[in-house]
Length: 310
Image 1 (cartoon, rainbow, N blue to C red):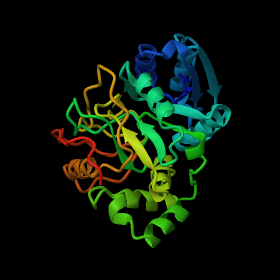
Image 2: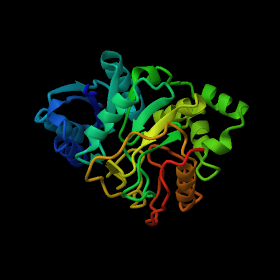
Image 3: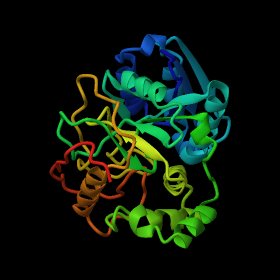
């Protein structure tokens, strides 16, 4: 089996970075995988000490086939850092598994990602593989596809990433011309269109809303796991975009998952996502990477039946 390189983006959160790397080191296939780390430079003098601490730790990392560290000389910010780093590695290797410094993975994460990337690599309608799943699905559910793309532990191929449209204005124009705002917003349950408008207007730089919009408008699909392979530990007010909440906590998968499922948009899963989003406060500011920007109460899990074609 061909193994995709892992691309990890870090900044100034030492404890989060350590947990992310440690969980990756415990993955099956870690010792056979190449790890590329992109460490952003300090935004200001206040961040310098923390950035240095992270960089010192990076030099101690082992447990992978190889470790390549890219130290940014100037601060790019998370969005430009991700776009540039993913593009560089994919152009070199043809595919990539992408993580940020607040994502803890199941020990089966790399297996799931590599199996999926290999299985669907020739299916042009599949844009990406996603490792995180909202707390909505029974633990014995199979994986399923949804239209668009996502960003908490994901993988893709050069053929799909080459489609990435950096111009948010162009994406917004296409979305509005096709009158797809309601579908893009999960049946008006979450303000993704607002997030795209904010990016297009220069109020944010969000790479992830552009990735979602690119895949959505191209009618591409993303595979989601039946049980989450990723847990976001960044909802503690420590990051640039994430607030403080337990709403997105999940139980990580403890065994391999089935990935060979119908390559169709799963309408029942789509509706379950929408139901989940409706449990969140309406005043939430759209930001697909964090999915929320304030502190919310924990929400109950929603259940779907897997693999229902639309």
